Image 1 (tube, protein in one colour):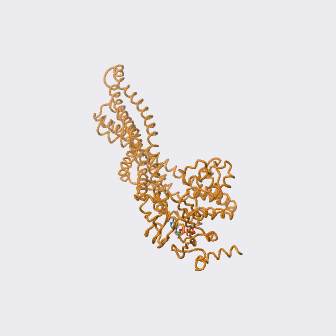
Image 2 (tube, rainbow, N blue to C red):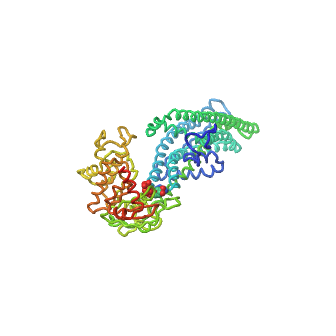
Image 3 (cartoon, helix red, strand yellow):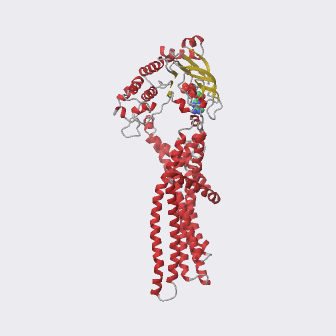
Length: 632
Ligand SMILES: Nc1ncnc2c1ncn2[C@@H]1O[C@H](COP(=O)(O)OP(=O)(O)OP(=O)(O)O)[C@@H](O)[C@H]1O
C-alpha cells in the first residue's frame, strides 16, 4: 500500500507498510503456499503439537488419541455393517427372512451411529481439556524464559519484533492444537471410507476420494482468498483501528477536541470503513461462487462415481448388494476429505506460528546471562574501567572509554546534555547492562561473572520514566522490596513521607488501597509528578546500598523537588550508601561530593561544584545558563 491514496492525496493516518505485520505472517505464507509445501510442513507441525500435548498432559493426550482413533474405527465398522445390511437385504429368498437376516447387521449400524455420536461428544470434551493445557504450557514456558532475558535484548529490534510475533503466535497455536484432533479424525474417517470402498471393489477406493476433492479445494481456496484479501487490506485496517483509537481513546480525547479534528477523524473513519466493507462484500461473493462451484464439481465427481458403480454392476464386477455400500462410502469420504484438507491447511498456518514461537523461545533462553560466580556483596566500591557500550544496531557507542570509581558514603551527580550517556552509565553501574569492552567491578568483582539479579539486590533505581504499576497505591511502594518484613509499617510510612507520596495517598478515594489504574473499576490515575513521588517512595522503601536516581524530580513542583533532594541527601548522609544522581537541575547537584560531566558518551570533567566552576567548560556553561534563567 503506497503513501498516497487513490485520489493522490497523502492519507492523514499511517505510512508505507515496510514489512508484513506480525499477525499477517502466517496468512501470507498460507495464502501463497503450494500443495507440496503444505504436505511437507503439516506432519512436522502436527508432530510438534502432539509432543507439546504429551508434555502438557500425558493422560489427556493418550485419551485424545484413543477417542479419535476409536471414532475412526467405529465409522469403519458402521460402513462395513452397512455393507452387510445391503448384502442380506438384497440376497435371494423371501423378504421377511431377508429382513430378519439383516437385523444383526442393522443393530451394528445403529450401535455404530450411537457410539459415533458419543465419541464425538467425548472428542469435544477431551479437546476442551487438552488444548488450554497446551496453550498454558506454551505461555508459561515463554514468559518464564522472558523474565530472565538480559535487559539489552529489549533494545534489540530483532528480538523485540520476534517477541511481539511470538506473543501473537500463541493464539494461533491454540487453533492449531484444536485442528490436530480434527485432522486425525478426518484422516481416520477417510481411511475407513476408502478401505470400505476398496473391500467392495478396488477400483472404487480412489473413486470415493475424488468425490470429496473439488469441495475441499473450494473450501481451502475460499479461505486463501480471504487471507489474501486480509493482507491486501492490512494497511486500511490498521489505519481504521488507529483512527478508531484516536476517536475513542482517553489520552487523546483532550487534544482531539482542542484541535477540533474530531470531524476530520470521523470522516476518515467512514471512508476507510466503506472501503473495507466493499472489499469484504467482494471477497464473500467470490467465496460463495467458489464454494458453489466446488459443490457442483463434487456433485459431478459423485455422479461419475455412481457411473463407475453402474458400469461395474453392468459388467458383473460388482454384486448388487455391495453397490449400496459403495454409495454410503462415497458420501462419508466426501465429508471426511473436506474436513481433512481444510484441517491440513489450518495446521500449515499454525505450523508457521509454532516455528516462530519456538525460535523466540530458543532466542529468549540464549539471551539469558549465564554467569555462575558468587553473588556480590553490597558494594563498597563501584569501579568502571575503560567502559565502552554500544546499543544493539547502533553505529556510535553511547559510552566511550569511561573510567570512574564510586565509594561508599559518596553522592555523585551525573550531568550533561541530552543524549550524553547519563542514563546508560547509570544502568551499567548497577549491572543492568554489561559493557562491550572494559570492566564494571563491585568490590573488585567483575559484574560479568555474577547473575544480574544478584547485584540488583543491592540497588534501588528510581527510573527516569518510572513504571506506572497498575496495583494498589501501597503496593506501588512495596514493589520496591516485596519480601521486606515491615510489621509496624515503619519503613513504608517513612518512605511515603520522605518522598512526598503521603499527600498523594491522602487524596485517593480509598487511600492506600486505591488501585492506580483506570483499567480497573474504581481505579485512579495520577498526575506525572504524583507518579514520580510514588517512584521515589518505591526507591526509598527498597533500602539498598547503591541508590541511583535518574531524573527523580523532572516532573515535580519546587516544594516536592526540594523534599526529594533533601531525602536523598539524608540517605547518603549516614555514610552508608552510594548515591548516584542524574539530573538537569544543576542547583541540586551543588552539594554532591562529586559531579561527573558527560559529553557524547565520554567523561569530560569531574570534581566538586567549585572545582568545575573554576575550571570552566560545559558544566559552568550549563550552570550559568540555568542561573541566568532564574535570575531574569
Ligand atoms: N535503547 C536505546 N537504543 C539505542 N540507542 C539508545 C537507547 N537509549 C539511548 N540511546 C542513545 O544512547 C545515547 C545516550 O543515551 P542516554 O539515555 O544515556 O542519554 P542521557 O544523557 O541520559 O540523556 P537525557 O538527558 O536526554 O536523559 C543517546 O545518543 C541515545 O540516543
